[in-house]
Length: 346
View: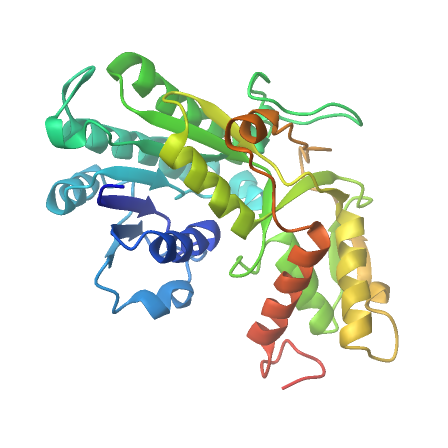
């Protein structure tokens, strides 16, 4: 396999940082260029161990800055892109939708234009060194809207986003598609279900439940807790991205799911039961659960039919929900050890 210089955007975030660790370990001839603007959701500690690695380079750049993006492409002679960078917290998109449009839509456009400028002579005319260059766009199942009690999202499901976040991701997906059909850019898109695992930002559901439980604070659950999500362990997601990036068909979309549908209240229950067993206190952690006012436009259910991915790549998640959740909880216990958030340890 030939050497590559891969631009990973948003590499200080949750999925991006996990993926950089994964790909550098698996492919010793690859160089990774990480472009991250260091927003509140970025964590330099996620990749601190790589700072002296000669195959890893970091640029603090906002993808909304088209000129800076273009300079990195030319300076590093980027051969491929795996685009994670995005504003992704739905609650924040409700409060400030403009930032989501700028980052997720315009930022993606800037990356596509920089790739096209470096890789192509003109539409459908790749330059010789970049004939196999690929732009892999990472997206979400939220672009498809919401499901009822039955059914699954597939690659053929019409887009029906219901939040500013999912609408901005839908816009970015469509731009990526357009660059394939208009310019012949070698693109693939993957839309994944909810990820969980080590290094996720504290604001997300599973880290919030763990953090609040350990701090002996109220554990907030939206509405009646019956909203359903399909959960995918981040390590399995990295393997699926690897397969699609290297061997997926040009212009195609692939859905990546964990086949783990759980209600939010089930998630809270699983976490509390684990903590009851491993860090017991005077009463069950479940007594800290409180139902709070539901989010506006809260989608009821997401679920993915990953048949296409399974048939083309024989990909099946290696982690069960239970094994992945155990690893995740233990990682956060270790993270919070000695901090004020732990009511018992320290």
